[in-house]
Image (cartoon, rainbow, N blue to C red; front, side):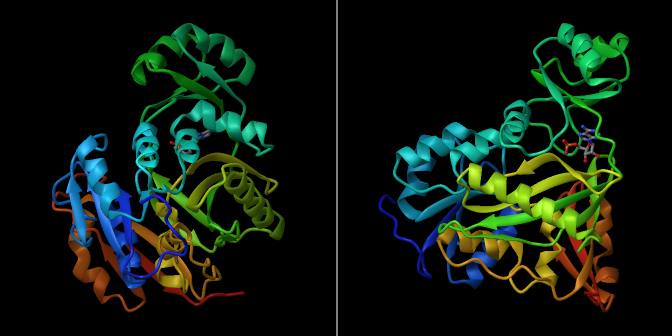
Length: 363
Ligand code: AMP
């Protein structure tokens, strides 16, 4: 509601746009701090709804649903970055604070806007060219070198909406493969590892970053995160500086995830950022006193940020599709903590849960 005073006291209501597992774990963390969560989601019986105090089931742009959310929520956040930016603008117009703000959301939603933002702020990223038609691809390939990666500007995730272009002769086919939609052509990042950093900025401008995670993907989907990643002090420092620049330049409040490519000499290039809690930060649930979900709630509610030093090393494994049916086996592993998202349908590749395997932490 307008004129919200921070820090929010326990008993306040945090509105969350989106009903998936990220919203579920956010709601659990919020409940631990005494808050109630109200979810707005188009899906009935979503993972987050089953642990939240309230759910409004409606399309994100439903005016009555937005008015209802504003009437009950003291602050609103989102767990899903493809919520229309116009919805966030509308919520703000109705007088509620939304964190992170619409600029962070709009920047993350369009790969050309996002990469231009990195470039304009001295954040190292791959070279790129905006593509509006198939005919733009050949000249861009000439500039960037082959192979290059064609990605839709909007709504791509987990490697969807992407096609490698090895030569100008493949331009039409690649354009058709991504659905002939406005796109970006990216130079190939010659990375040796994929890393990520989860960081937060509070309402007072304070910043806290967790140690880096090393991420392994399968078929474009995150399979494993190993944390803390073994990286040089310089690489860790560069990651923190990148996260701090993004957070500050966007006047960000909340947690974000920054996906990084590590080059052979340890330097980093940014791939993208997610304006929300991130799958590669799930390891913090069992290895940090304040995990990424509580950190996000703290930031959004105007509480002090919590510590980010881990007390254990973790290998986080996503449970995809039918793998989650082995819950009893994972639960029997003495050093494993299992998190299940309560999804009824185990479609192939669908994120059903994850396991954090804890190991002694070597400093
Ligand atoms: P994204 O959807 O942007 O996260 O990309 C999915 C995956 O594609 C990344 O995790 C990388 O493995 C790979 N990838 C993305 N962009 C590039 C790039 N410019 N060069 C090389 N590999 C990339």
